[in-house]
Image (cartoon, rainbow, N blue to C red; front, side, top):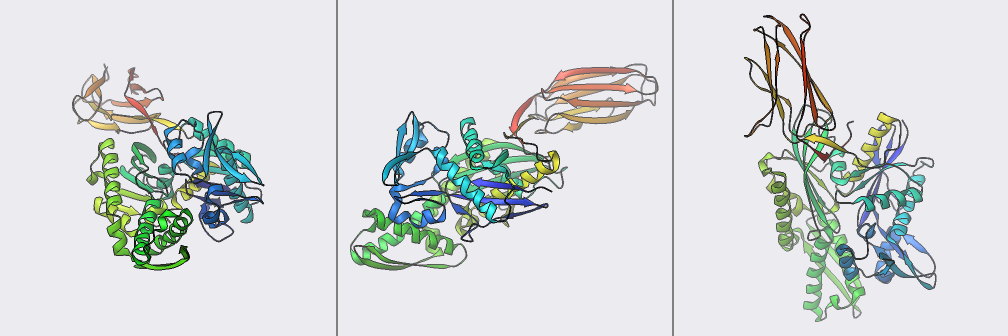
Length: 506
């Protein structure tokens, strides 16, 4: 089997996975890390991407472009751009109605578009892929948020292509997380309600799905910037800043460089607390030449996080309300994003979904990239690498379709959320000279009668075959035939269907 890659391009970090010989694994960068910071640092001498840019952030924050994904494919007037402009230490300016990063580079002031920066990031990921030994492989599936518009999707495709990748498909991030665990792919007769909780570096998303016949139907998707992994880091930094001020009567938050130092050390402590009960912070010359040393316990971190955890619960409840489901209706919960590594976040989600199965065996900051590579393997095996650029939307039924022959109980033919086109076949034994069939749509009142069919002069004991088929436009064609008498009748009627996001079958 050919080789292909899966990429999760987050706002804070990127992750690269590979599908080779039917196996999927995450590729580490040159530093041995399995995620790469999405930062680009400019200086008078060169431009660096990823970990080196993050390591120099304390000294060079004003020339380091970050959160590139948030600016990609947007106009300068977009509210999200204006918010980023106010918080970014790197200057964000307007040129021809578009946002640009303004930096000092090669001893002069220059500006770079988010699209140029995205190309630099994809170029760095391609270099990681080549260093892995896959010098000729270029096919890739890239994950994008569900709320990415056409301009943003196009920008991702164009910048990845310019960097040297061949984009096979874009896949929505929550769909990719589902696909990483193969939910609904092995036992396709099962009907599953699943929820994907992503806590990323700068935002959080909760997505609710109905999974049937190996297809993923998105019921609701809510996003917020009010909960993020960076906010948990800031809670720890605030804790240490208060400790420093109490000891030395000086506030390190007043100095940008001191605050950046504290944030960097606090992020390390946050990662430590995901596996250990205590974390130690030690910073030389934090503020006004004063060294700092402090500790934080996981229990203290949990107390500091109560407000953020409450916001996360509100976000989850908002998603459930939008989907029309209760907590008890959810059977599967998937965690994604680095923020879901925190024990307090995991416990909060477990408390909300007490009866659901929690999936976190794949590293939560790698699961979306893993799913993207899984999608790449599906494409390679099904269409031998044929390029499929956009994420496809397939029609699905918004109400179930049922049928009942005269003298028999009503049965469900196609369930709610069933993808179309679809086909079904039923065989009935008629006890009367006229075979009658009733076809309805919906399980709750009012139930809509779609069709009433009568096949005359079939004779007692006749075996009647009924074929049902729904096309992409939602038209249901019903055909009844008695093989012995050759009696035949058919009708075509419209049904209720909708377009929802679905993944490819494996």
